[in-house]
Amino acid sequence: MRASELQHPLPVVGRDTDAVEAARLIAVGNQPGLVIADATGKPSAVVSAVDVLGLLVPAYVLDDLALAGVMDEKAAEEVWAHASERTIGDLLDDKAVRIYTLLTVDADATILEVAAQMADARAQVAMVAGGSDPQFITLPVVVEAILTFCAKRTDG
Amino acid sequence: MSIQIILALAIFVAAYVFIATEKVSRVLVALVGASLMVIIGATDDHGIFFSEETGVDWNVIFLLLGMMIIVGILQQSGVFEFLAIWAAKRAKGRPFVIMVMLVVITAVLSAFLDNVTTVLLIAPVTLLICERLGISPVPFLIAEVMSSNIGGAATLIGDPPNIIIASRGGLTFNDFIVNMAPIVAVLLVVFIGLCWVLFRKQLRYNADRVERVMALNEREAIRDVPLLIKSLIVLGLVLAGFILHSVIHLEPAVVALLGAGLLVLLTRLETRKVFADVEWETLLFFAGLFIMVGSLVNLGVIEMVGKAATEAVGTNFFGAATGLLFGSAVFSGIVDNIPYVATLAPLTNDLVQAGGPDAQPLWWALALGADLGGNATAIGASANVVVLGIAARNGHPISFWTFTKYGLIVTAVTVALCLPYLWLRYF
Image 1 (tube, rainbow over the protein chains, first blue to last red):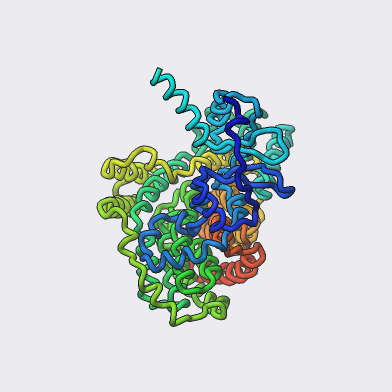
Image 2: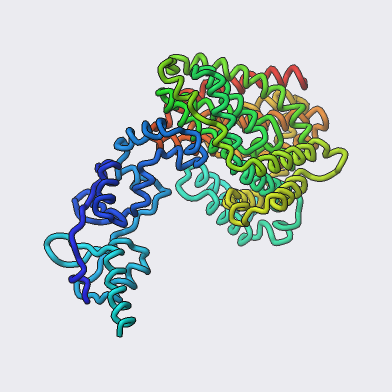
């Protein structure tokens, strides 16, 4: 199995994408992360889903987790109402957030090559080189493909 | 002047410039500077590790380490968040009353914790309270960091420059309480008045949103009651140890380390959590600075400048105190006050040694100038930089000039008030 057989398109977000839209893309597609485009629109980086989750929570609560407990449900609802005020750009500017450079794998790379490169780079998403439209491989797809081989061996 | 002295001075000045411009990590600058001093032969291993005059001041390093461990464990209890929310509820949502209470809490905490830790604890809860009240947190954050810099001046452990001054001058915790705390209390009252003048127009009372503050449950902030009790007991014992120095004859560094050890033993926290809040970079920065300044002492540069200063001062110690107070305030507003005090402390020691008891107030002039001068600009103190970062991350950026326009006023007033204090009390 080659990378080109596992590839599929993914939504690409920009600096201006707000936190709610980013969260929706993750929830709907069950994505492990989001691909971020640079100023020219070219996919260049990946942010993990858990960092997008952090974008929904006020920064002062992340700075001091004890504050999450002092707010009741009503207060929390008011917090979510302001979630769209933050953007992917805020994540990119936050030095505490690790933004991964987008890993690129060859279209003819074997599943072992893809898995090794993704594990080494701790990448949740990789871009497949070549092709007119950007195509990607995500961690769940790679794991699923490997499990297929593991199952075959067990059955055999 | 020998080539070695010229090289040492060049290394020292270059390091200062790099630290002031903050283009390169200050730890890196201090350690590279220290290494270069060794390479040119300005100091050696014995001078660095074993000399009280020219080496690393282990009293300072281990006092900081011990207090960082104690405070790091104490802050996990949630007591600071509890206090701030309790205060906001007692103020019934009135912004200026909340500001006064937060300013007082911050100043008192700062007297016993380092300023950066204090603002890291108080800023997030301030943002929550202001968000609940629907008002800008900017005046609150500026007032808090300034009160932190003022309150930190009150004690030996409140501000790193005080720790250096205490160690170099042989001053005790009680010396600081007796000489610094009274003027700091006066300055705090004056500062609250200044807050009214500077910020009152930005403090809009919104009765409709008061219930949102009253709905906050401060008890939920206390995450670990046994941890809180153990931490407060140990902190109390450590403070008692500082105060009883003349009875127990233990240096503050030893008291802090014993306290940290006891707290680790009592709480049985994981090592990772115990050392999570130890700022190793800061400790290395101090070590590098001590080596650089020690090299100048070793080469006789400090003694040379000290002699010139002693001759210039003569017996006019009030003049010297005035110069130190205002000079330190100006300098500390521009560069980090830690390297400044590390350099000035041996020099001041020479003046005090030559002048005897009459020159002793020079230590207080140096401490007041260096501690209060940090309020002058947005980069005058580490705590200022930290608060500006928190504010920006939460969508309330405070520009350099927004901070500095308030800072210059507060610094001018507070430092000017120290002059009559020094004159009336000591001269």
